[in-house]
Length: 527
Image (cartoon, rainbow, N blue to C red; front, side, top):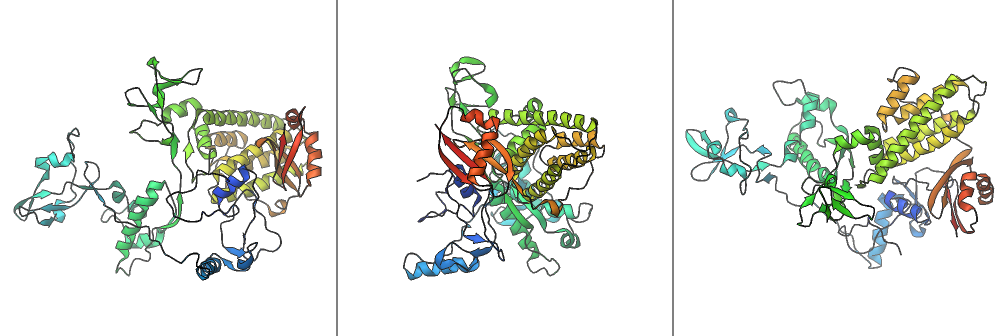
């Protein structure tokens, strides 16, 4: 039995669903613990054997390896058939769950968008006339009051409507409501008469990709969709109701929390770690600090890091690399100094690699075309392009580590100047979304013009006879080696025995078990 931190306790009741081949979180878990991955859905019209590598297949397809469901289309036919069987066996019944609940859009606070209604002396609702709009919040306000600060703004609350003194509504709209239509303004940014024009909306909308945190997916997305539906209601001129074509929900950045002996929150900059791994206050080394759980960064709990200071110490590229590499973007990022240092060191390695490649290009030419380099580059283009489209940024970082190890070995061989320069330029362009400052400077130094189109893979290089296999020792990655496709376990062991780096871990050790995943990895259990 395994326990995982991504099982959602409040999602439902009954059987726990797990599908290593078709859910990325389940697959990551299975690979980490060397569990067997059996695919049950293969793409429609896929011929031959279908296996899962490092990426779960989450698209539609045909059911197989599932006995009574084999041959059915997933998810349309297979889900209905499974429900039908469960009902026949009286093991369950079909039910539709609606997770929407009532939500209050107003807040009793100063910040937010004023609501354009008022109340007369009989406490009846009065619409604020257009000539009194927009309602502006008071600028000189005391926030050190109990309750809603606007309730204490006596003069601001007074408004004359139809000759009668009325009282303005002091609730404000949730800030997400305020920004629920901003994307429409981008469509008509030059318009001075209207916030937006329907003709512009019909041309530009919908937004191709929506990216936001979980709080956006719950609130901002909800309000935006409501706003668009309201605009399109009984409006034949507006051609759409949904504002966004695609949705991606990113995880939160998390950090440990700290408190002093009086239970006051402390920021990471206010604590220090001694040689015994005990936390103390920086300004009082004798006062121990209480370390709390890792939580989403919040100003109230002070578990935030200073981005300016972090960028100053490590550089923007290293910070970007760490955030993207730590975990899949849909999961929370656990901020750590160790991870930050590792990313910084990798960026420095890339700079050293760049100098070596420039020296190689400037050295004596050779006639060797180096098929391996061209093949590797095109396959890298294919992998990174696909991973970018799928938001698999952490996988791209793994691709870059693979690239680093490959180039480090490859530049020791004879390579034709123009071949090396051409392929290295393409690789640098692939790195622009991840480490833009490094990649831009390297490209500028190499060819001068950074503004190049995104590289395209040549199909003739994509059907490789080679693959990269991860070598693990007791579950820890120790090396990545290039081998021919479909190499057997016995052949791979021979290759491993030739590798000096791996043999340093195997010296005076006994291999008691081998876990081999073809074309992907081998885990050697030693003692």
